[in-house]
Length: 274
Image (cartoon, rainbow, N blue to C red; front, side, top):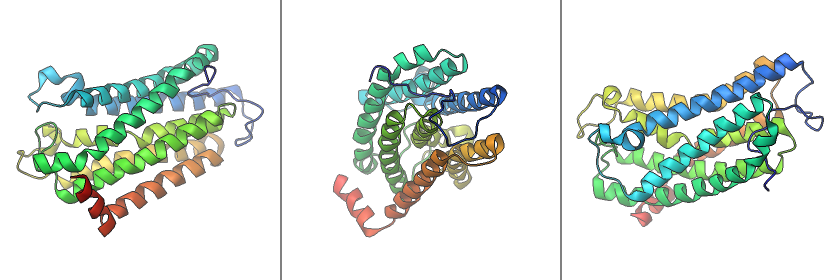
């Protein structure tokens, strides 16, 4: 496991999902994965800025200690994603492979903490009445249920995509796509925090979050996996099979979970956890 890689963007003969290209095209592909990783990091840093990274500068409600741990571990995962993509772009795959064990451990921590926090959402909603964690606008019950089920979808996708990516670590074009998609699946909470920013919400705590802000967050979450589709079409004029499978799974699981939120079974699970 110590030799596992987290993201590998070097062409290998075993990977036949994309046609052979020149070195310049490989470099451009490496830059896409690096730039996208940095973009995901920006979402996490901005989203958690008020409640975690820049907390002393804002007046926000107190949070349990484990929420700090969750935010820090999630940020560490994305930082490692950027570091690994940077190492590949710099042709330091030796260091890249040595960080594989750290990536595997972080993945386990991200999943465990996410499960713990997600099952607490219904109970926390009952206590706070939907008050945002930043002290901003309240969240209506239907939206809270959507977030809850969206988190369940992410926690389904993340371990499956990471596990397959590590299993396929010797097929870099598969490996890096699945790990990037796994990371995209987990940025929902950070993107949701952005919707709570007063400058965007523009409302008192007693008012609901603006619909257009929620729509913007949805576009942000949906747009990240679609950027991988666009990348494949522009770089190789065809979709890599890992992109097809990963993006399809992303939307099937996410849409399915969102639909489950409005069902009787979805409401029953919510009530049982309160």
